[in-house]
Image (cartoon, rainbow over all chains, first blue to last red; front, top):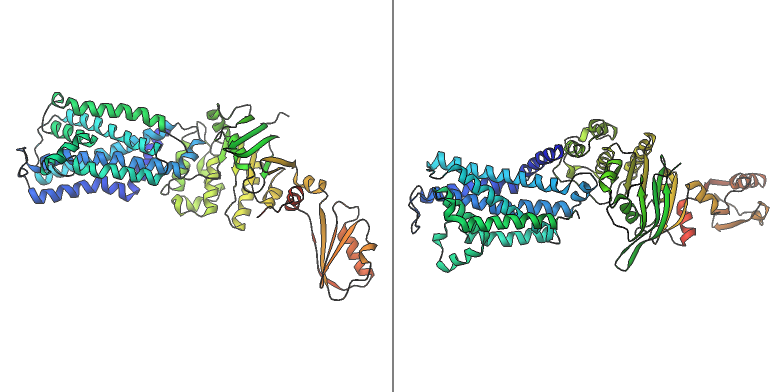
Length: 248
Length: 307
């Protein structure tokens, strides 16, 4: 327990010292929010079905974007480079368990993802007076499920790719189309219908749907498919992550 | 006394390459035991089998009676390990590394004291990536000492360090032993093994070719010692025949090398000096060259240590 706390604290400091991941998790989504806010203000997105202001819809979408980025990038890169550089090797010669090493990553990246979402919500409230119609516990629950199910992808990539470099490239190849096509980076309604169909195959789409729905006050009953897909990913993620973990 | 480390018939192959080919030895409490040999001799594989990082193909390894493969957790508490290839995150500071690693052990040594003992206090807040090679090694020694273990493994401790840093590390290793710990180290510097170790196993092609104290290895092999001097004139004819025992003379211009068997009754150097004096030969720059472990290796394997 003492080692988990100490390691979590250490990893949190390291996360914040790494400018790239801290920027993309905490600052970049805010920038996106301000850019879209300047374009659309509180008007509904043209052609979009929603009647709520654009910014209100963007907060859950950008949260999904943060989840996609944190699930795929920091965990993959950290774990793969730790293994490649012999950082895990050094840890292996101590009594610390691999579960502690993984748990520390999950806790830190989860907290940073949550912080990223919190900043979005605060900025939305203060700058754009976004109205929140959902149930806060529902939204938090959806957020926890979505983030944890995505973190599994990062661990699996780190555990299965031969080098840190390939892990990073594969993570990017998975991430970018997903960000663009799933509706996380901008509203899916703005894209042609054929493209929208592809999005059904992207895990991030289910995060966008779930969080977007819960945010506007829809119940879980309307999002059983989304929740089911994510829960399945979470289970598989845990199983495969633990199986594919390698010290070196 | 019961040895704390027992290795019997250890064998490890990587594909078609036999890295370690049937090695057996014991290490006793309180000694500095060295494994020395050229790159690829099997030193690191052997030490990593002892550390539990590699699984032997055959043979037995017991450290404090523990099997490193199945009882690695218990071994981690009783043996500190410094690895040849390992790292810390670039942005982790020295004190943070020590603080983090000490949380892994139920009874960790005081890392603040280790920081002072290893001369890292000034570097306390320096990120790992900004440390010099010697400072990184000192930090790794500190991490290895954190569990306050009775046994410390040091793998290629001084590779890549300048001579000054190397001597400082040797001092540290002697200091560790003075504190009652047993040290097992590998090195490809014969000089390091000779200066530091109580007993040395010389490895070549995955086998131990010799195992003894450095002094015994040198003495028993009957390697030659040499007396070297320069002179302006010519050496009197038959000079070497007046020396006792079998000697060999080599003259290169004004430079004379006299080879003699090691372990003579009268030291070769005093005989040579006396003879030169009595014959009135003017000489200068006289020195002796004692055989060292490099010579032992050469005579055992027929090859130079360094390619």
